[in-house]
Length: 116
Ligand code: AMP
Image (tube, rainbow, N blue to C red):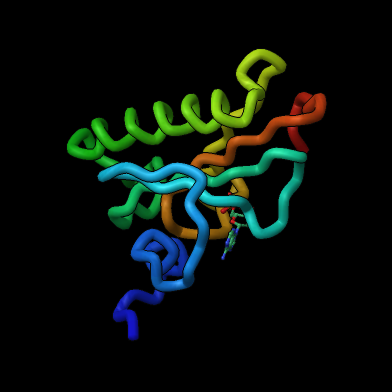
């Protein structure tokens, strides 16, 4: 049984049997449970970082890996040409509901702006 109460830590550790659409030593990516677009993938660091706001300069390499993984998944999905949106909700006004840093990759339909 996991000692971690964090659902994304448990996913990253493979405890929930989640299928990864991308993984490397630093990050994993998987389908969002409630997709908001034809492609809706979450990319997370394996290591628990609560939010972008509480990350530190020591996390900068993994932040870079996070964006590189978004780029890779977008290319794999064939949406790099049509375009996509990368969202990192941060804190309560930012709409962050899971307190483990994650980037949303949304694609496959025109996305409105500004966001709600
Ligand atoms: P945010 O509101 O930015 O914190 O986004 C959290 C996202 O995590 C939402 O889009 C949820 O649908 C998604 N989510 C929550 N739990 C899971 C899960 N177990 N597997 C996949 N996605 C999840």
